[in-house]
Image 1 (spheres, rainbow, N blue to C red):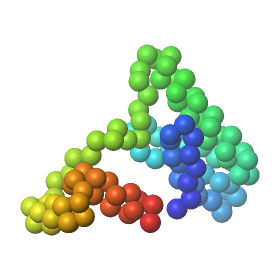
Image 2 (cartoon, rainbow, N blue to C red):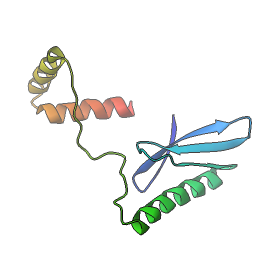
Image 3 (tube, one colour):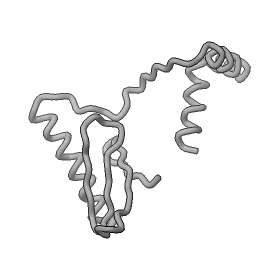
Length: 110
């Protein structure tokens, strides 16, 4: 997956062969923010403008801008998975939170 980042926001980038343009969509938000450009430079500029407009709109409306992630993650897993993860974390000398963070980070960037 091709991505771009700006001010903590990430967008997925695809190429639309039919229209011969790059198309981007900001990930992790309820709001739908999309943009496009014919060149990579145009795409970067459109992405930055889309995020800047989003942040300005939030400010003008007196709203805190939605962030892609808060850093808090609640999961419901089977008790067997929870137990196995706890044992794996303890065996590695880490808290379950530290261990899970490392596992998720590896999976997300792998």
